[in-house]
Image (cartoon, rainbow, N blue to C red; front, side):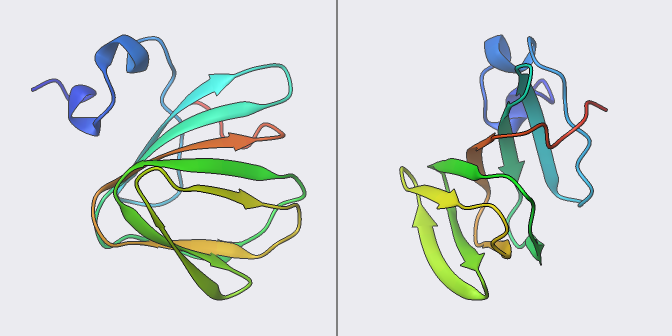
Length: 115
């Protein structure tokens, strides 16, 4: 199986997008870029925990498939397939992934750089 296809997104999508540099193992991401915003297609493997952090811009996302706890200011919010979430600017947030999970996140500024 093609490595890109195994990420859970169709080749027709991933073959057109640059893969992003992400700073944590067990995660992959592909960037759709506009002048000042990004749409990022993530795949997180089971068991990954993203450390709490914040940024000066908003982040909106939807769980394509899988399950995670989104930690907002330390409080867990369970997100499953089809759930949406909004992280306002400045809010501390992280995540725990209980199974292989795909999410699509929109950032109101450029967040990730291509590999």
